[in-house]
Length: 110
Image 1 (tube, rainbow, N blue to C red):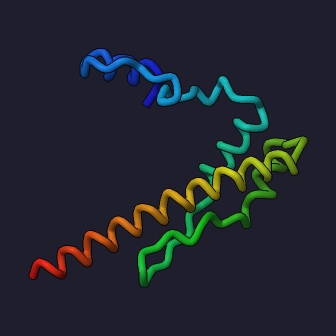
Image 2: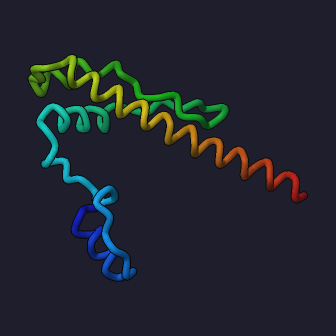
């Protein structure tokens, strides 16, 4: 969702826009942050095929991506990717807990 779409949604719903909820435009981020987001999105996800859990990103192609884009401050970019990766891990863990909890509640109803 873009910032314009967010404002339109708030207007339609009669909500007051909140600064902390306004989606950031990737172009407004510092260059290394833009590269970190790009690389994180390019890295493939790894999934547990038996339990359905997210195992994280596959970092194997990261060096190639950095070489192709001639990334200069690789340590900073990697640090940013790892921060975003931990946020993704927390998100997927919460989703899995919610699914597991819903499955347990469904089983109790039977």
